[in-house]
Image 1 (spheres, one colour):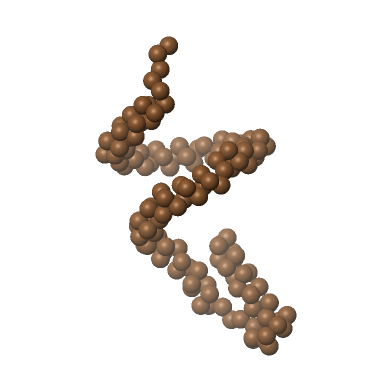
Image 2 (cartoon, rainbow, N blue to C red; image 1 turned 120 degrees about the horizontal axis):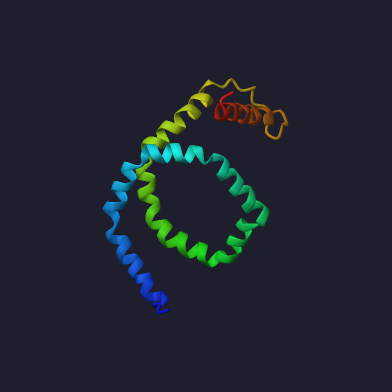
Length: 139
């Protein structure tokens, strides 16, 4: 069997994928409702697959295989390039998501502040934690 070397295949992969941006975009735009219904229908398969991966120790194995050097290299180059763009693109969703949190915090009536180091001050922190947890889980 005749097979090209990995470097040649890698270059072709990048070249073809770089040219496929418009195809990718139109495919995504045409599949929104299918994605939602198919993903929802696969919920049990997802849970089973995650449990199997946990049982097999695949997460830890993947972390060990990648190693810290790969994490640092990819996060400090590719991640650093994409981070500002991703944050800028998420402003509206951030505002939408943080609004209820801020509303919950603004509505709190905290116990009075105690002297520095007083264990009663922990109740203030606990009140915030309870309110935010209730807001997050819808209770």
